[in-house]
Image (tube, rainbow, N blue to C red; front, top):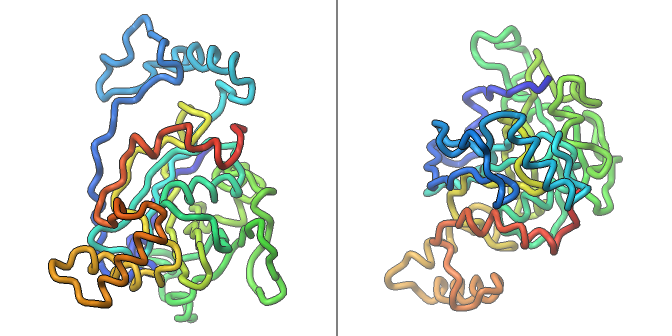
Length: 309
């Protein structure tokens, strides 16, 4: 059984500098079958709201054909929906929502997030589940330890492939990302289900990239559905992803201000030149451009990361 997480209201502002909570959505293309040539006798596209498959039988019929060409892709596979955003980002809040196969491990999820936000995989990273403070009305509200409202208790750390020193850590469970499947934490009977839950609810999942600039990505599990692809499928993307090594959220705000300035000063002109050079896009680069779902969902981009599982 899959548990859907209903986040406490304060989770949306965790680590944030501004109170922005709204997440405007880009237009979502109609769901498509895994096999473009597949046609359902009942006409899936006539269903309201639009779905890729009108029934489980319809889905299995299509995915079985796909699996014949791609043995690694199982028609019985589920996909988890993750809503993620970059903590502290404002105007706009940088958001990515996508599905990812249940049997992917956290190392693969790391690459999915790198792709989602446009990072360059050039720094260390870590996943962690944190226990967030109770809300008013919860049994634990008013607990004596006020530090939990500022320093959440770490329930579990999932270390990256890079060398990692566990000796300085004094809380929670520690595992390597290649040893943990997504279903190990998001399924009720998963290997680490009890570790990451409190009062039956999955606690906050944090993905931190670059321990210097400290890019904090908040991740919410929104449920499961039949898998439509062997790769992540993006349904929402808002806000251009930051550039590596720009100095964290404040540095990224400075980059955007430099490109927005009608009469940039010397420092802003130098910053624009650095950003264009560091991005690899040269004069075409701008942080003001919105991400494109079509490009995020282009399966050809995944070949440079790893083979389908």
